[in-house]
Length: 461
Image (tube, rainbow, N blue to C red):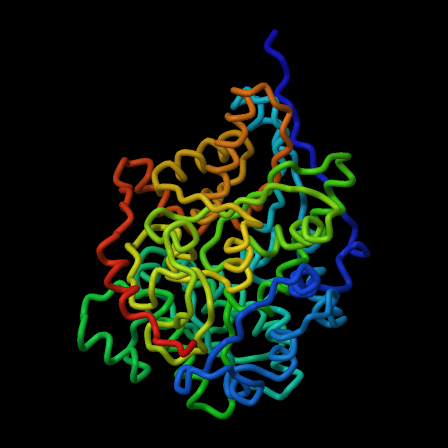
């Protein structure tokens, strides 16, 4: 008789264990003597103050952006909204371990249980609440694969805000069901570049068949917000307050790993702008900074847009229209247009300043991986664990599988934790192309990146 298939072990917290505060890594970085470079005004190239950000963000989020307090309280209305899907489960992937024949123990934190199907509501709900609290009526935003747009549309429905979404054209065409979900929640969605904004019209005049990029969509959303008194801008990644809100993931995971009776040796998450990576890893990196642990932490990014592994650490614009604040980050240049990989949420030229700072100080590792190899790992994971991962999440799965196979070669009982940041139910066109053998890899475009980096802003010393 064949041996019974191992069951998947699930670690669940009750609602009372949802964190009551977000974790701010800036506090432990300051104690370690590591300081962030200030964001700069795109016009003056001088450090910006709260008044400069006020046209885009409510003051409560601006204060979070610059805070060095370690713990920032989660308002009760946000925590109540979190209870619609949090705490999210932590699983031990026994079945995947058996398929890989590895002595490693593999755990994954599953954020696909949220109404939007990803980790993005963790900050969308917070941003919608703080905007509503300050009397904002409407939010403008961009989205790549549609996960962030779906999350903000959902949050707008929860807190009664109108939402306008500029969706990158490549994803708008590849993922129509994401657009339908956003519209079902009540959001208005247009493909970016669009005819809605001055910047969008300019891009289309120059490149009528543009696939768009997150940088272009950000410029459109920023212009939208800056030109309307009733509107603020909401960003789903990159900024400090977004990283902050996502730390509910890692704070829960710390409790759940304790329930499992293990500590991870290596912690992995995919990284495009940095939000789900920060969400899982920052609380653990905080332990490293305080001398309480020595976890290895790996960011997995696409070979087609490898800002951490191939980019430069420099001041750059977060958008192609050069309207948003200039921040110091790992970047491929704001003019860089990534190829239309199916992990649309990772098609971004830059990386969170906080994540970039950790990489610059060798506090985290980074690894770039090809699209087809990621889908190979994602399908292997789906067949073992039964969950179809988002294309973005397959990057983390690929690195986790590589780490597990390395443990097999060395005979190490390594403990691996990764973030399964969302499900792939709206990404079936991507899987169809993979299963048909039509998915292609894109090599690192060195020449185009060099051209883009030549246009970095000239920041005074």
